[in-house]
Every structure is written in C-alpha cells, then in structure tokens.
Length: 288
Image (cartoon, rainbow, N blue to C red; front, side, top):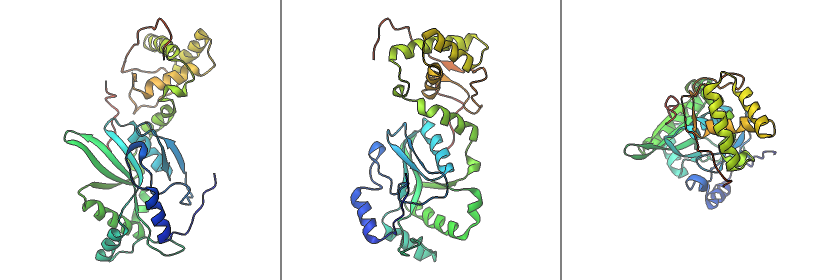
C-alpha cells in the first residue's frame, strides 16, 4: 500500500484531534501517526497485538523488535505506540525555555506534534505504572537535532513523573525477538484452522513425543501430521501455538530450531477429550 505525506498544517492537527488520535486504551487506542502519514526509508508494518487485539503502527525494524518484547512480557498490560506529546503548546514552551529547536514540518515549517514511540502500561506491586520509551539506533544519538528532540521529550515526561528513556539495538535481545516473531502469529487458535478437539489431540501426542523422544521438533510434528492425516505443517503450527501461549515452557533466550530437539522446561497436559467442543516462562522476562 502506497504511503502518502501531506504537509502538516494546524487544520490537520485539529482533524487528528477530532478523530481521537492519541486517545484511548487497549483496542480503542488510536495512534497519533500511522504508516500512511509518515514517509519512511526503513521497514514499516502493522502487527496484530496479542495484548490489545488491534494492529500496531510500527515505523522501523527496531520498533518492530521492541514491540515483540513488549507484547511477550507478562508484566506489560497495554502498549500505545506513536503517542502524542500534547498539548503542542507545552513542548513549544519547553523548547523555548531550553533554547532548543522544536521539530517542524519540512514543507510548511509549522511545529509538529511530537510523539514518543511507546507509552507502556506495566503491572507492578503498587498497581499499573506508565513508562515512556523511544526507540533509536545508537549511531543516531550523536546528532544534535536528535539530542535536542530527546531533551524536549525527556522534560515533557519528567513533568508527569513518568520514566522515559531511549532504547537502542543494544538493549534488544535478538534471539528472544526472533523466537517471539516466529511464535507470535500462532498465538490464537483461530490461526490454526483446527477444532479445539483436534488441537487437544495433537498437543497431547506432541507433548509426549517431545518429552520422551530425542527427535527434532520438525520430525515429531511431521509424524503428527501423518498420524492424524493432517495437512503438512499443521502439527508444527500447533507446537508454535503451545509455545506462544506458554503451555510449553522453554528458554526463550536460546534459539528455537525446529530441526533440533526441543528442550521443554515445563508443560501442561490436557485430558484427552471424548467429544468435540469448541509456570511463568521464568527465564524469559525482558527488561522494559
């Protein structure tokens, strides 16, 4: 889908406010920016969130990777991306007070509404706490314009007593991200094209084989397809679902290779259904 970039004007800012951009929680949240609004030379995509049940607007490979970590974490309860720093008058005043240049539209030169990449709700012993996180490649941190923008952003969140920091590629565990990315699309049973009865049958067979056999996950899954007369890949999709939903617990900081034996740290067996019917993953809680 082609992206478009319209020169920003006060009228467009007002239109976005009227649309409810930057407002709401969970599935009702509307990002201030979408991938249609901003031209990008990098990777842009929309990913269906597990926690929010909505598609998230992500503007770079590092944002995608960090999003996977947030969506996987059991401490995170909500993810709001492209969060606007409103009102605009506040960031303008911060910039003026600090003698910094406020970001402007490259065409109209009108001040833009600044955004923070992620506003995150995190479960804690004292209740839900908000964190603000901006994702940026480490090589960008030496640029004056970037640092000026960050200082405005930092002071905005400081005024609200909300933790803000920059996340770079050095903070993102790539093995964990790759594992999550492989499992993420199979979280919901609706992605499997199988009945609950079939899924339970496959789960019990695969679990027994994974625990008792030294065969690779791919070999075990292939034998499951043959045993139940399923389309090739069906049992492997169920295995991904079991991992994604933490019914199978593994060390997510170690690469998951279907061509190798899968080492389970724990599992839950489901009693075999008689008719058709509709542990914490301990070592795998990344820092936010």
